[in-house]
Image (cartoon, rainbow, N blue to C red; front, side):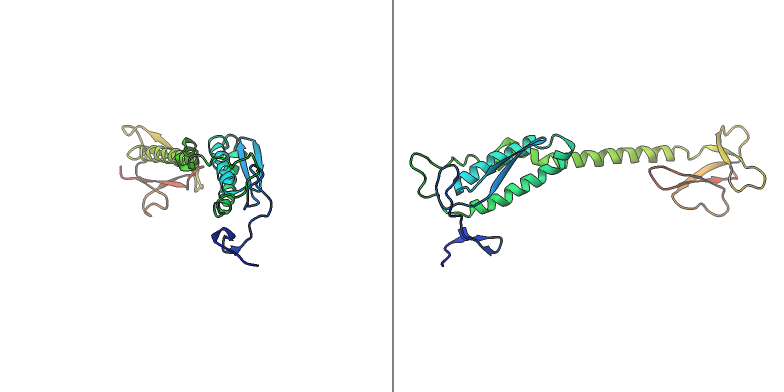
Length: 217
């Protein structure tokens, strides 16, 4: 048994081309691979074996369709990258084949068409990046708003209401021209200086925030 050319080498293993003819044109050699076309919740399988040209043509068509129509739906959004990845692995096998030989009489290999990189559907590959960037942007905007809200309390006056014998009481923002127990001097994620009273406010989406009060103000 002899092996000739890079057609037989896939991912570091020696592999013979399929002896079966191409399902479309009847040419050989072929690779026994399938390609998937995902459109939302519907997945179509194009079963091989394929010769090099037919395989590349089906890969480009099916993957372009998947990148443009496969994202619609929560499950489909996460499944589409795996479908595209499976197609890419199958493409590697057909791309290593030699030129199609001896097609069935009256039949020819499919035109391979434009490269996937030259089709507008390739923009669909950017969709996960766009979505991730949008999520990060929303999180940052919300965080900035929280920080601004927290910082807005600095300089305001508070009055404490602590029941006798209790260690925890209530702090109320009051007008600095009236009676008050101090002014909020700073905000920490940790502890205030030992001499300053502190107001600890649990935040649902962050850590506890500590407002440090200057009693001399």
